Length: 323
Image 1 (cartoon, rainbow, N blue to C red):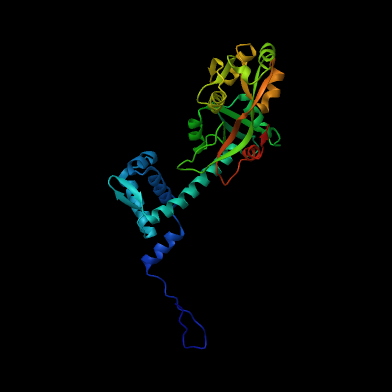
Image 2 (cartoon, rainbow, N blue to C red):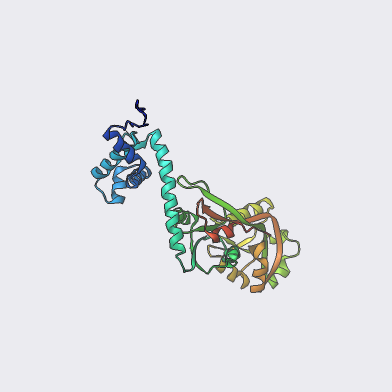
């Protein structure tokens, strides 16, 4: 409060808060980010013991830091429910801000590590095992147009394992044959990159024999398919059943390259996405037998929402191929 003095000169008298209150104001203005991080980890782990193990702090020390943070805020952040720590309403509000702060900090570190001054940009791609390598090669074409020099790292695994790597920023993007379901901790985005019908191809002899009367000609025909965990396998099975077509299944393969290798060697007909039919037929001695328009194969880029966008990821996600 400002008080004027009965004098010809103006003077001011300011009522400062009591010393303890003033100290509190200073602490509030200078947020202790160590305390905020301790709170954030405890909230993520739902356990003081697990957070203590990650931080390599004694549980009593960590508990004291959390209580100090609560005193500064003047609010209780946790409530104990049985053996678990649950966030209060204020705790949930603080957690949302903390999650944004530390997620953005991780992104900043990744951006700097991926692109240190004067060195090439790094792009780490996860390729789901059901995605043919030729499809992955086509989906990576936009990266070649980026003027900066790029170091590309590709890893192949199951979609579930790759998603775990994506959420911890160990890969920048995933190529998959299906969109990703919601994730409890991060905002996962699915970008449709390629969609088109399936083409059945085979050697010249097989094409000559089974092209006429397609698709009825597939009854009893030798056929190679991906393994059942691939979307294409399920789509083909459903289509064959709907059309009362029973081919002779000669093999099922996790490795699309091996499937193509054995198919071009004459073991059986095999399906390929229309978008790479021309490439397959130019590289291997195989020809089109027929197109199954009812079976559409799609490929997606899976990313997590980030405020700092990787230029190569942005270029890939803007590219759409429809065969």
